[in-house]
Length: 249
Ligand code: SF4
Image (tube, rainbow, N blue to C red; front, side, top):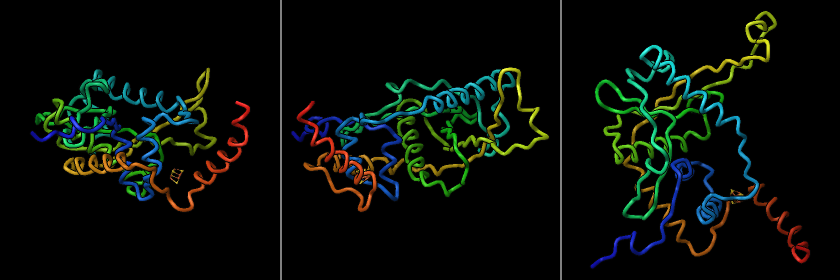
């Protein structure tokens, strides 16, 4: 009897956003291979907590607005008629194992809205300046959202009828005559302006990307990096300095 991939190959876990790296114009197979083999635990990775605080605040705004007014805030309306926010499953529940590649694809969407027509709309929030389709990371976000659609339809959120990015752009341009409206007794407020970008629904591309992940993972040697990458040159310098010091460790 023929073995399935899950019987013959080591399992791999990949977050939806990391799968999206494959779509970036500056994709580096070397970086990707290293991250896959280190299970995304790399040194010198410090993620500022402020972004997860803003993320969680943003979700509260949507949910509490719905609780108060039984509709999502007005700035969502460019996405069409959206229904109510649903509880986002824990990442251990919002995942699938692809049987062809034995890859566990995971992710946690920022928002899933259940539409009156019985379908689901998935949104991811970005705290960043809105540049429309000029965002260099857009190809990665497109795959990330389509991965959520691919997973969602397999774990109970079927059908997914649409995807979108919602950029919350910090409004940093203020003038003297506005200053009092930003000042509180114990600090100040900052306004975030919501900008929408609908994303094309094409989850059928995901299995092909997972196959590519498996191919890169199975390479017996780390592949070459992007030519001229300054980070790799810095790493070489670091290794040559550290190499002289390993005897003292
Ligand atoms: S070339 Fe750049 S992107 Fe590629 S492995 Fe080196 S540091 Fe990473």
